[in-house]
Length: 310
View 1 (tube, helix red, strand yellow):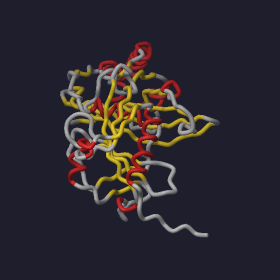
View 2 (cartoon, helix red, strand yellow; view 1 turned 120 degrees about the vertical axis):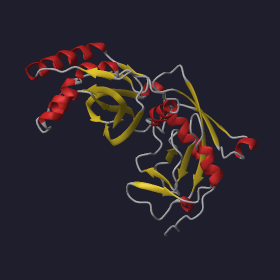
View 3 (spheres, one colour; view 1 turned 135 degrees about the horizontal axis):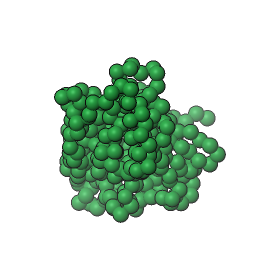
View 4 (spheres, one colour; view 1 turned 90 degrees about the vertical axis):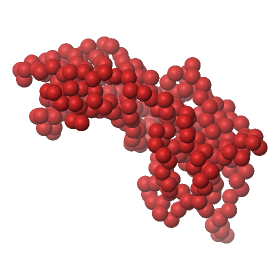
């Protein structure tokens, strides 16, 4: 017996299902919206602890869209494109402070719910596009915590002048500065503790790089300590994949942080870019039993750095 393709979805049931998934993944308390809040396009309110700074309590609002009627034919294997999103919903997602979440619940059968949060520093773009990697899972705690911080980012770093180094001393000076950086154990409010290992050093000194680029990266090693503990002016999170080993899943992503006009090199202004490798570990079957925050582990490592002339 074949099952007809589902063309309608119970919105109330979808909202309850989404609230349950969000509550478990975020280790959050969720509540249904009041009648007054429903008029402002709020379906669910959730409250959760900041992933990096547990002393912070974050409150976010979510609007639920359910069913195939919201999926645009222009969707592809890399992203979902949502249609029929009204202006009231778009307005509710944007604004100052923590942006609202848009959750799309696909029709059954389904194994994941997709989320979208507007960039708090830019006007929301339409149609709304959601990467296929943006589905609800425990790592969402880190994504939403960063969006919360990003909404209040402000420039807080000086421009440093990079001194000229003789070619014969460049590698030895950089090694000394990198060793010092490892002992400092830098911590960033956006990322948490950052491990400084051979990963970053191997990447910037590999022979596949041009000599000029490699030498420029070595010259700025002594100045990294002034930025690793500072919030960047802009960041991007690039999802790489999830590896499963037994009962545990390890999700790998790379964070790219921009520090505009951070360095003055030979009289010219440069933007510093720092790349961080992040791994987040959580139970594969996180939906099947109570999930506590101590079951979600994160580790961040300095992966590379370089600079671009303004």
